[in-house]
Image 1 (cartoon, each protein chain N blue to C red):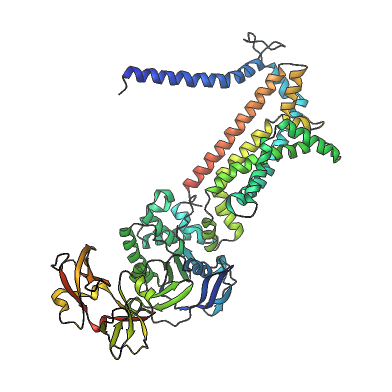
Image 2 (image 1 turned 90 degrees about the horizontal axis):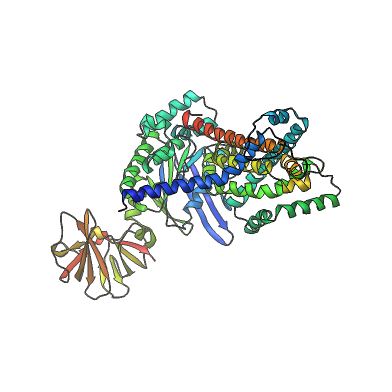
Length: 358
Length: 271
């Protein structure tokens, strides 16, 4: 999305050790100016450690962090031109909304009238009415607090704005609204956003690029499209949600063999080396019933059950040999007319198989 | 459902009970105040001849002024020292996890459970064996041994509800350590600091057993009250007693007004 020179924020071999435990293992990353970059990982993956190091509240055991080419490892948090929206927001309870937003400017010695003007501008940018200025924090709702925390961070005018899962405590609908708002704010301000979350779905909505972190290692960096359609391994593929996974071995050009049953499946050669590993097929590309008849990869099974997922319906099919459960999804307005217990055919196209090494 | 009559009876009983409790609590103090306004030389109840001359005498008397200043100096110094020490002590044990933290917590609270007379005697022995002449200065030290743990405890309650992430956020927004202390830590902890200070002052102001052993030639108001009760009673005793109580009440009122003013100032205009 953003055509900007690389190397705005650069991580080189960043490693963090807590005693024997390695929280971050040789993380290399380059973030561009104006980018919305999201680090995704399950809890314990090291993402919180990484963001604390980036903000300046912790230092790496080894490796360098550079901003615009200057190594900033030893620059403390209050001297870095970056700031963070905390997981619990950390709004100051003894200050009004206005005082919270103005805090960084007050510290910087900005005149009171200028501060007020800027604070009101930011409240407007974040769609908060001006009368919030004199409200107390405990009079504001969860969503309003999110916006206040963002306004407070923007008032600092940071070069990079970090986010430590600030939306995780909110209910589903509000989270969805705020994800989109955040993306809009990113576009309006043009600032560099670095966001961490455990939800790849959340990352997909907002990010220009996504980095997947697991056990302190950066596994894959790429656009949401890359991560979704070209996962580098099984962990990344399964992180997004439910997928059909099959252990396979290469069996000649354009073919793989199921490692347990020996069934053959067609694939599209990607030019990538592959000997053995996993074949991933996402449920939404699977076909069921008549639609599967003409497909090269077919499996005979029995319809086990169906589950409504909102916009889609998921069908669970047990393969005839009893080895596997398969998931097939169809749009909610295009349901499959079959009953549980009936035999069905399911299938997928050769180009829909994603191969990842084991 | 209870009947109207039943509810009325219950309410009347509650009122009677509350009044009884208040009577038992405050009647003795009222008696002291009444006794201070008597014309007679000796304590008699009920009072039948009223006079304010003992108050005039008290305000004129130089020795009363001395007593007041000794008590006030001790209480003020104890308040300042224990608030400062307890602030850092409370931060240390309510906020950070370190080896021996639980032990520290227990050891610092232990003096509260010693009988104060024993503690005072022990300190006196210790002072004399070290060759320290006791005066109101040593009393400050003695008071602190007993008061500091209480103040630490009061403040730590506030510190427990303090989220260190507020400090991190302020630091991240460019504040120096000192600015964080001034803008975040102190204001948020101020209710605890104020109530700690109030307790420190009042506990020191009214303390008798520790002062008795450790003030040496100096005398605080409670000490004087006791010595005059034992021998040489005059209505000056209830007079000074009433003034001490009045002083404590006045101090509480001032502290309350400060808290109220701070709260109003904060809610009102932006800083």
